[in-house]
Length: 424
Ligand SMILES: [Zn+2]
Image 1 (cartoon, rainbow, N blue to C red):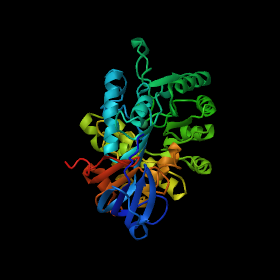
Image 2: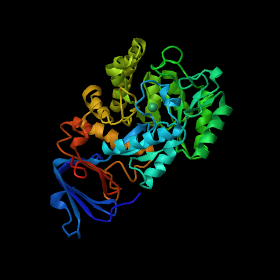
Image 3: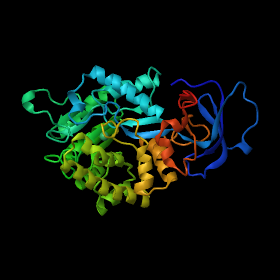
Image 4: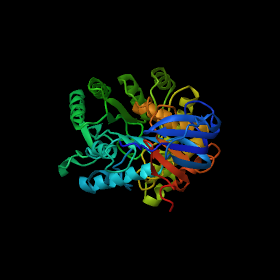
């Protein structure tokens, strides 16, 4: 990714560094060659002049690390039914939509994202296009196609149609097929393996949120093969036994982590495995599902999921665990661009402080991806992915939801979006 050779000074804002330090009012941040060279109070900032430096006035607002979407589906094109994810459009058109969704995420302050699964191998190539500045978007960590057991949540095309599910998931029966699926994804160039250990409220009849879609043996085979090749593993885990199986198999993160009993919570905390709850998706399904003819049974399932997921997220934070934020934007009732509603939801409904929520959305996101040494906090020597927001985010996190409040979205020291770049 290209960096800006013009030194940049951001001043006149409160800095929230996400590194555990107190916010600095009257803060200042310096960027040289795409890296942070100073962060702290203006009164202590080095005074040696920068030649032709760019000065960004934060207008008394807030300066924080670029946000990290920990469960991003670039190829979900605001679909109204799960089935549309698969064959509604050909891969060529979905690729274009995915590029547009990536630009949307960047414009909303998200400078990094971990893919939670993609149609075909689009996210692998989207990652390259973003890194090489062919298109704009968050620094992407790719997952490619997901893995699910035959007959599970993501296997909906009847056999008689002979169209399979190949674009979206690799379907497996038994550990040897699970190994084979991971090996295919190794060749595809993914970094994370996304699996479906459990069902979901979205599929109430045969794969609901208390059912399993993979066996422990299949999950274990996935982890052994992935780890052998240096890849990480995550999974859609709602049912208690599915979460437990994922932890015992050695998953590197858990998506959702909905129904947790004491034993599962203990295992999670003992292994320090991060969880990405993606709770706002449930809330949005309950609020807006009826507008899209969502059956009442599905809405009731989302309510049960939201209630249990909220309790689990609260326990994880209270007991010293880690949460990443983001999740499943790209449905008609939860469209791309709404990502930061997750943050507001965690403050207003889950009960985290603004500071805890921002740390989840930045530092923990970087830890999940494995880039905590270079991203996720505002610290000297780190890459300059910075968000400058008009207004006091620490008192009102919902300011981040509206991109009109984003003065500058800076990636690698370059302003990529924000009202300072595009005044209208
Ligand atoms: Zn997802």
